[in-house]
Length: 411
Image (cartoon, rainbow, N blue to C red; front, side, top):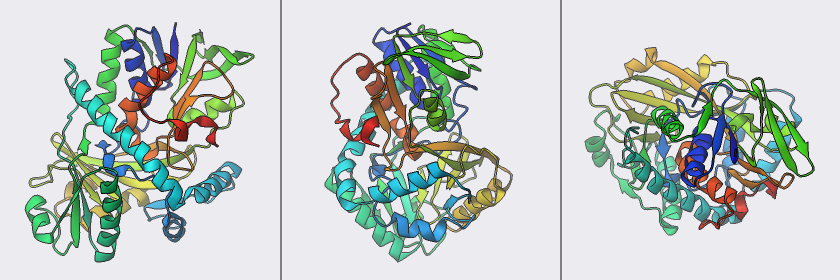
């Protein structure tokens, strides 16, 4: 075949879609089911408003207050891990104002291009995924947090990401279940949302009908190499050979890369969501509850609360304290969330790089390997544009977006 894609999350499936659209013969391998990783139950935000990277000034000080509190939005599970220590050191080095300013425009371009690609995909016959462009509303409980939000939105406006602040009276009109006393809100009209599971599985079915060989339950166990080329990918179901390989396995990318003696500095960051029947008067526009770090997403007749960032390695156990922290945090902003107490709980691992940017480009070690991982909490938002860029890289085409800050060798 022409291309072998490793990973059946949003990045892998989008890569398969855009490669097939260019006439490539494609096989996609997924160790579990399609969208069984962090594509399944996340908030589903498509968000140019998140064009400021995770690694930014002030995050270290805030994180130090939170990191050893199991109930906080950001938690590091105590353990001895040289890889984690190295990641944290690189993260600290990336938190500079100069670097943030340099990469914001790249993130903006990626997010905005994805919005347009989602628009195109929403017109695909038979592909329905709840695509809705009403923006995202960030709510702030305290004046201090609202001031910080206004500062961030002003920086985003400078690079062309529009926003508008709302008064408490306007919040009450827009969000009937909002608790009184909120300090303010900021609306980002260029944002959107979707049902992530419906999108990834729907697109996988679509590409399968167009000739992509989608293999689930196919775990990669190793590789065969010759010089600077990968000659075969070994799995429990046999070997696969292809002209080019795309590694898009999310948080499992580093363990696969180690089989090739490559080091990818990605840490799995566990996130949780709670999905329950949508109560009367629930918001019709997604919310970001600033101090609680909780996203609230209307998905059809359901409402989803999503949040927390927990660095605990490849650990998929459910920490009930973290789940309860989401419920409690959301309840400080909104009334009528009793259904969350019995809602469906999900957890997934977001692949986080130390500088808050994805890894995208050809491997410096293997000529026929393309890396596409490390999207952290913005994987859904950047899924289509990453897939499109992977296809361009594989075909040797020029890209309109400067990918130099995303190149794998930057670490």
